[in-house]
Length: 338
Image (cartoon, rainbow, N blue to C red; front, top):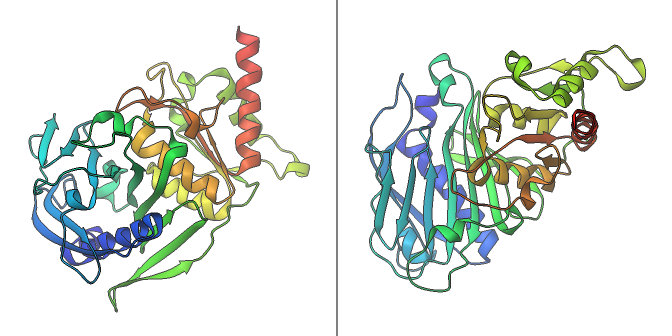
């Protein structure tokens, strides 16, 4: 199924929908085209990299390369690679197999941060995976783009979204005016509006985290897990534990049905494991626009300062009341510990 969904034709449709996102974000009509190159490693290993060029331009005018329209792309890959296209120059780190081809175009106006494949370890067992993206206005005024263009608070995002590849292929995105979901109809080759103006429940009965790491969790997280497992009719406990292992899939389910997703610090990952720029910030933007909440256990995710491209952070995200209850345990037991 994933192999069929992420083929050149359907990827073209995904890029087309991204063009719609940009149209709303920038208030300009956009055309789009994609030239698909060779997929390096598709199935059944890992869908890791592809070589392609993407174009955006005026809908009724000439086609333009992504750079000419004003976009720099940064991809955080499965192996913490980064790829930055600055005026046509590709910078690669730890990613010899990853390359994108663009013409040289001056003065890009926007930047895109992207996690191309969230949940990659689940591909060969046919479990849902996803793609996450985030769009910012660049802060440098002219000339080649810089890394500093990405070092912005999540509150500065103009658009964000994710694509989930599962029993159906779905795009969920926001431009700061609510959240909408589109489902791919393969029979007509179009994404159809299936979930307009998504609002996440304020409370829920599901919690999602990798309980196999329980011994390595902070005390506050351990206490919250026990709280979720206790019997209490007034609060409809115990809650159900639901953990897929693909962040996009878990958060998508909780977005629609209500719940909390937690990826805390551990003794092995004291700064957290998820990346702030291209995982947590875009997901936080979506969840907040749907009426939920996203924090690192203490402060709002989108207000955290960026210090490096692959900066990590803990994440508590989902229904507002569940996130706030988890934060209570974090603060209380951190205070006791100190």
